[in-house]
Length: 180
Image (tube, rainbow, N blue to C red; front, side, top):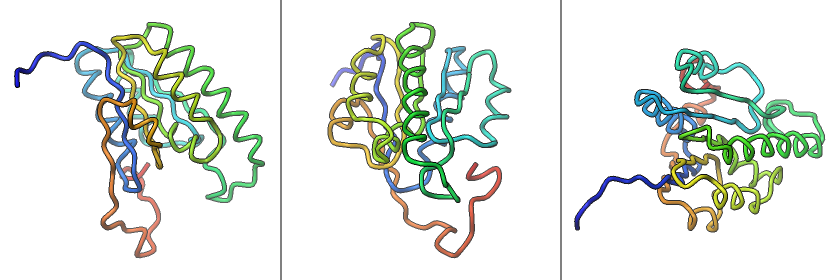
């Protein structure tokens, strides 16, 4: 097989029940910034301080991170109605779609967008529209639990994170600097 340099923008999916989906996407952002590529990260469902918020500031002007959410749905003491989460997810998707199709970015990461579909905040047709309308050279990264077969079929690269062992199973909560 003869290999050639890839110039077409890829659709990359990080999915599965294991930890590391966002971390993999952020690693890709770090690598892209090293080549002075313009990277946009839009996080669905995240609305609190995380280490990546501060870390990404150090990659400016190449990487920009936007949080779009009211927190995770039905966990961590969430008391908001589903309709409110859906409204914010739709607004975030509208902004993501506009930015993705603008031609301003080399890489766009839609963090937890797959989970937003699984959680009934967005429709699968939203993600398929995003994939179908992205600029030809743009690399699009999608993360989250429960990627559907339709998304997997549209992707160029899919990695499934599989949980084998996690401190949560022994009663430990997320660790600062490691999990968020």
